[in-house]
Length: 334
Image 1 (cartoon, helix red, strand yellow):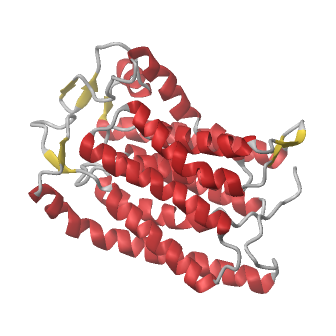
Image 2 (tube, one colour):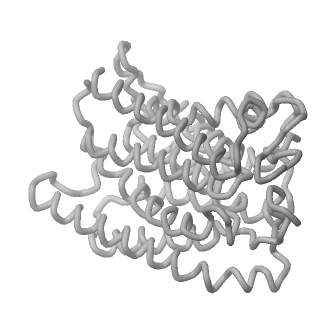
Image 3 (spheres, rainbow, N blue to C red):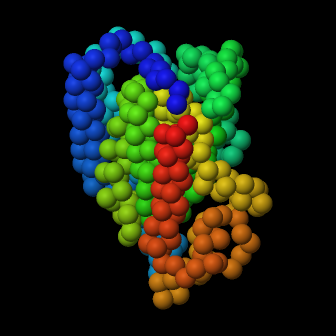
């Protein structure tokens, strides 16, 4: 296993610092969870009143459901980050600030997409540009298992921007069912939190902890039957945050591997030039049916098994959890 490398935040790592960190993380999680949980009931009727709704295509009668649920998640996230920073008093914040710029940029692109339906290339270019400062502040040396450390030099600027862009858009691929993307995000975030703690790399915790708390609060309203949809606001934000956390914690390869279901989804979507939707083509007696061309993991499962929407979501959660468990075990053994 590679020796722990902590990206400095101005702290000397000792028992007192660890206690301060732990208390800060608890505070950040509590603020993020409470803020998100309180905003959502307030924002749902207001979104519906302004026509910001989406059709729940897998339900009888395709009812209208409030969209852009990512807004309270993003607000809760930044409230949690702010509480942690105020409590912790970081003395070196350039890396974290660059990460937050990339994360906020992805959320902003998601809001624009929800409102104006951006083209795919616009969703690729904008997060890339906004993630360039993160690449400029990162350590260009990356550890590759069985190979050693490799210095990417100035190429790290482009590598980081590409990583954030790809992760943001990949997280947006596997969605379309109540609670699916939110649950996947919770599993992936929890995995990176565990790995960050194992490797004693706490910088990533400043974005992972508030995101996990915000996603948990959101799942209460987004689970089946969903009262609010995340929209691209949340999915792009979530993917960018996971990528930034992987870079901050120096866990780049582990982060890539937990994205494998999304990478597979991306590959399947290329068959239809990203025009396919994940929804069922028909729902009979509560069971989902799909009869078109296979262009999504959800299509594969609906074709192979007799599934309800809840079962389909739980199966994909289990797939992601299995992938994350494998990543953790391999990481501990290498």
